[in-house]
Length: 184
Image (spheres, helix red, strand yellow):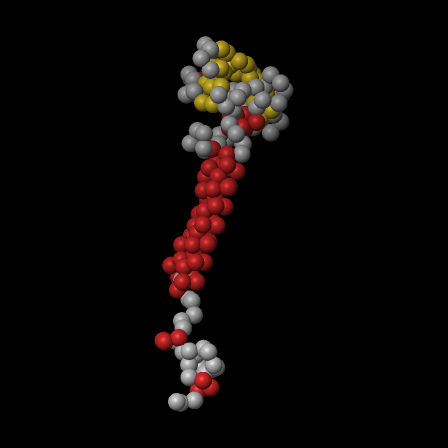
């Protein structure tokens, strides 16, 4: 029982960790970008990104970087929606789909492009925010399978053992023992 219980507890403990790792940013394999600082609150900058829709040639699209009062940059799209960083933009924008690819400046969303000149790699223009929930049914099935297997193993190892020969201590008629415990 100790081995089965330990395995089951280990599997149960691992499921939240797997869900957390999956939700962290499965699409890029990188940690979420931190907000970039700026020095002029209220200043608006334009950042051009490249966009590819399927096999069509890439085109430039403008995003705006707004220096807030707390001196962190907010990304604002052409629809007026704002985002904290690139991961937030990719998860919540309504401009691009999961089949669209975007390329942003390496320094994005920094307002000083001289920090890292050039563009980064192509990434999906939109990521699903519910990627972790896609794994939830599999996790539930895993817990049920391990739980039922563990329960079955416990029943097998702890089943009640019948006395040898099927005899019982009651000596009742018809139970395989001499009647009433009498000796013939």
